[in-house]
Length: 166
Image: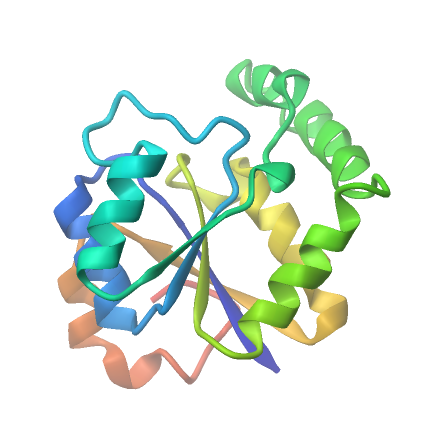
């Protein structure tokens, strides 16, 4: 089985975030935010693209895979069942579903990480995107961008499990 990585930038800064990606060997970052802007320094689309470029990581804008506003509002309110229902409906739409196939195809040629804000993948739509990549032969490995040393210390474990984060 192949691996698709996921990461959120909540609770970290741009340098630790980038160091985490580098420690794992990520080659491309798929930004799956509906609105790729952030009040957090370094995480708005253009600044992020520039910083990733400086270290040789490709930026893949994938706004079509972003969570629609009603889904974001449900998640923010803590109604994760409603959030999941809304996003699952969204990702199944005829104009959205091909983006998952495209992402799976790109992931054949490079190590790709899905990015959004939430630290916990269980409360983020990137988990659902990853689930939709399973029919293409992918499993997920969730990264946490606040401690890049974790991945350096445990590099030998990264290929043992693709089901849980290190």
